[in-house]
Figure 1 (tube, rainbow, N blue to C red):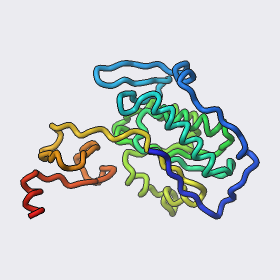
Figure 2 (cartoon, rainbow, N blue to C red):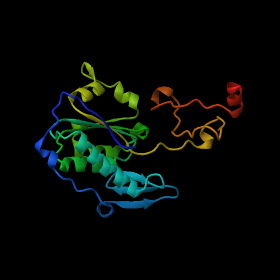
Figure 3 (cartoon, rainbow, N blue to C red):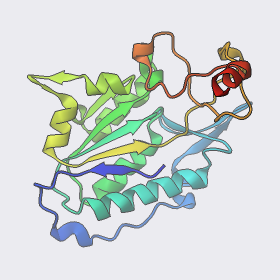
Figure 4 (cartoon, one colour):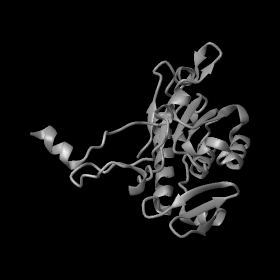
Length: 228
């Protein structure tokens, strides 16, 4: 999914640095900086404590293409390099993709990049070391981690909401990097109807901690009753 940006039209749209030409990332460069650890079902690419998953849905080529398209999109949509830019990353996990995006934007001349990284796996200290490293790279005050979108949207800073402050100070870019994980058949008591849309995601015990509720599943028999 390509990034989306929300821009405040009160900010200037020209900057002399907008003519900076960025060299896209290449496979050769990524392979030089990272290492691949193969698993039984998933492969993980690492750089220090940062990581991402590589499989048939998230290949190395796909990751590099996503990063390069994201950088090109931001440079085109937000030419003012000195304006604060907030990047909200959904499903950020091991933050390796975010690290490359941050480095490329910094090379392009963007100086104030605020990150809001969101992942359910950040519960109970998950990915603690890579989150600490990312704060060092991007600045401790510029990175805030959350387990759900709702936590970010309801976070108060002083007398206002953090999300509103982010929106009012400059452009906001929403990143959706990885597809959600498929729900295992054993994780739900619902009966799958092959004619229905494929449901993807991960179940949580408490609804208020869910990133989103997309569809109520029902058995094929219940579907036939509703349609008659």
